[in-house]
Image (tube, rainbow, N blue to C red):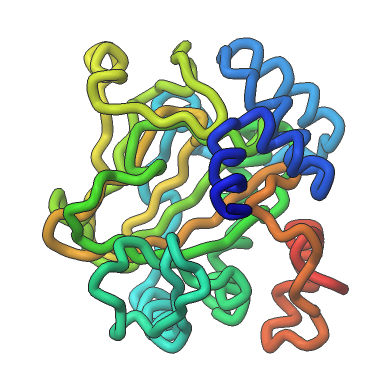
Length: 307
């Protein structure tokens, strides 16, 4: 009975966020800014937020590209050894079913009915190469040049998407991410991704377009036909190591794999912490094998790491 009530409340977005706000103030911020979906209005409020955290200005050659098309493909080079070390490290960590998070298993022992499986965020901080990529100066400079302030690392995660016949879940349908005002997401394919592997798709330049949506809304293909016809869309395919950074206010989705599974690593940069980030720091810098990286980049990790 209680679980049914919780499920119903989750479907009523305003009530869900108001109730969650009593537990965690980040949900209140997300509720407020999540209703700012007019691009011009959003830029105004994002500018106000950025000025509160203004920092020394950095320059990026990719800023104009991102402003024009909503994404930059392969903004950094990921060498073969780093990619291989990340892939091998993740093989050792358990993943959990999105629908049943209490069920954990190793990637090579997936239950047949599991369609999406996530790694625990804590495990991402045990991989040196992931931390080195997250602190890459090219990515930090792009955020700074775009918004006028330095980011925090809000969330690092990775997940498997498996071929299945189930209906697409939320993020496999067109949507905008409304987690924070000044925000960028960086993605890395850790497997080869072709058209049958669930590629990421984005409507080019759509961060500048009006589009009737809201918090936790997702849309079918016919809802975005006119937007695609006007702007065109980008399908991200490539070998393992292919990476891209995007303004996630642009309309986008991840396709459901048809033949081959997909492993994706995501790094979320924001200025004001979103509910995706842990409520309290959960990594102790002194206890970490990679304490030097965490300490040298304390401004980036301050919401994640205890110093």
